[in-house]
Amino acid sequence: MLNIGGLHQGVVIDHIPAGEAMKIYEYLNLGDLDCEVAIIKNASSKKIGRKDIIKIEGPLTINIDALAVRNPNVTINIIENDVIVEKRPVTLPNEVTNIIKCKNPRCITCIEQELPHIFRLTNKEDRVYRCIYCEEAYKRNE
Amino acid sequence: MKHLISPMDLSVEETDALLALAGKMYDHPEQYAHLCEGKKLATCFYEPSTRTRLSFEAAMLNLGGSVLGFQSADSSSAAKGESVSDTIRVISYYADICAMRHPKEGAPLVASLHSGIPVINAGDGGHNHPTQTLTDLMTMKQLKGRLNNLTIGLCGDLKFGRTVHSLIKAMSRYEGIRFILISPEELKVPAYIREEVLDAGHIPYEEVSNLENAMPELDILYMTRVQRERFFNEEDYIRLKDTFLLDKKKLANAKDDMFILHPLPRVNEISVEVDDDPRAAYFRQAGYGVYVRMALIATLLDLA
Image 1 (tube, each protein chain N blue to C red):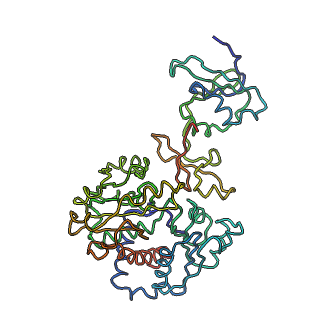
Image 2 (image 1 turned 30 degrees about the vertical axis):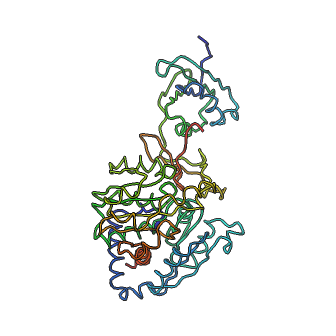
Image 3 (image 1 turned 60 degrees about the vertical axis):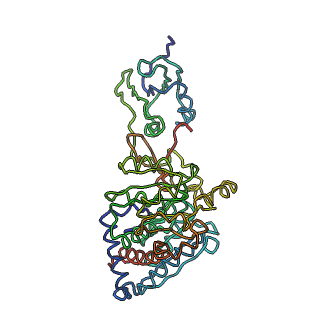
């Protein structure tokens, strides 16, 4: 068992599918944060077998909604004064703006760069987000 | 401010009311000849479309209104790099209502978000073409007398054909509708239409690749063109464009009261020998399109 120091204050992103941590790291631009970030890969998990975990030290400045769009199964632990004050799954936002980009070459956002990229949750069960302009579905794991 | 961006912007009740008004305009055009006097329609067409543009212009002229506009991006300020939102802000001061066609999907929605006048989507790329859908519905209603309990065959390019997708969505809201989807493997209806519209709505449908076998069951046969501009690859286009052609021989097993619809323009998917068949309704369909656009313009301008 590998031990990583606990957090006094920060966020633990748990139950990340094994191998996905670096993608989330890049997706949330964690490299831009001026704080300690620990990535644990291939940890044992009773729930999903193998998982990755990301620990971020410091106050919550990242957009949790952004994570939900891409990895809806992860859980978030908020830690304050060495205590987990909140433990919850990420919730799917109904609409996100400029979190994910529309990749449809036929979409108006492709030629009008200043337009906000807005996606709406159109199927909660299957967690499908569609561009409000062209209705192209956002594909996870791209 | 009301706009029409997607065929599903209108509820079934609103659609039925619009078709009823269009039917009245068709029966008594003289009663509506001055309804839009003093009003102007701007036709903002960023890509060529003779038929849709003329249909909109004929509709406004039939209502006593006038029209202005442009016919291609080259002859508009888009050539100078102006955004859709800026263009519509300006057009809002020139006209009372706007019909917009744009090659990029979602452009009319962008316009509607910044417009001071009602915006009608006159086709945005391969995405939506709501007035074509309304035209299709009016044609079926006028010819069959109903929009429920119909077996509708959709034939040709069901993958890229936006009119097909919109028609499936719109007709799925009526009772007793069954679809027979006739296409080559490469041009089948996209998965999301099958899953989110047909399966989700428990709408019965079959996917087949033989037009002749499906013919006897159909109340409506909706033919589509395999469009060159929807392909990235010329070889794919040439290989698939002639796959499903309708001729007199294939019509032999069709019901006497079946009707053939086509959004037009036709290339060669319907043989000209079919044109004289009383079941060929595609030219009448274009005529109905004018009346349904008249009803839409009057409704969006709150003059109905």
